[in-house]
Every structure is written in C-alpha cells, then in structure tokens.
Length: 132
Image 1 (cartoon, rainbow, N blue to C red):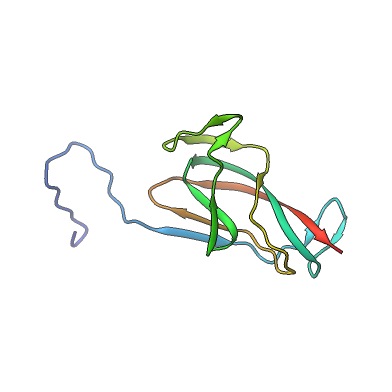
Image 2: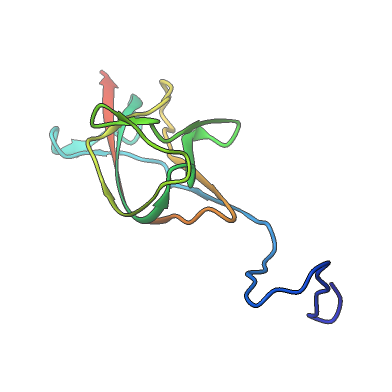
C-alpha cells in the first residue's frame, strides 16, 4: 500500500480494507458504592463483578481486567449455551460477569478491543466488595 492505494493478488468486486489496531480504555479511580451511599475512594476494595451493556459486540470483541497485563475474555457460555466464537450481538445486556479484581485502594476497570472485531460499549457498572 502506498499513497492510499492497494494492490490485490486477485481481482474482487468488493473488499474491506483497514489497518489493525488495539483500543484501550482505563477508568478513573473508582470510589462510589450506591448501596453504601458513601464514598469508598480510599477504602480497600475489589471489583468482583462487572455489568456490561453494549451494542455490536463480537464474542471476542473485548477483554477486561484490573490492568492491561491481566485481561479476561467475555464469558464463552451464556444462558447455559456456548457462544459461537464468530457471533456478533446487536445488543448485549446480560447478568454481571465475574471480574478479576484485586484488593486495592485504586481499583479500576480496563477494557481492550482489537480490530477487526466490533465493540460498542454503552455502559459499565462495577460491583465492589469493600474491606472496612
């Protein structure tokens, strides 16, 4: 590829072309627990579950974790059925999933997506365990 042009080995009528990329997002330091109605910003806490609402989400569209060195895939079994690895859901709104959190005063959520798998995150809801 040069100057925005590409050369294909064989002619095609339609082609999708793009560059590979990795998208990463990290939350700010988390510190509110609605059920406690108070700030837990400086408390030792662990995110133990993550609610996720998404659209156009590929079964392997995102990975999640407490940092980018320790990421988990989305669950491969949902509603008692194995999710096909090539599935793209138009809408995703399931029960909270187990989150690989660690006890810390600086708990965060990290999300990583990689092309060409689609992922549109609409909302994240972390659920905490707090050590008072």
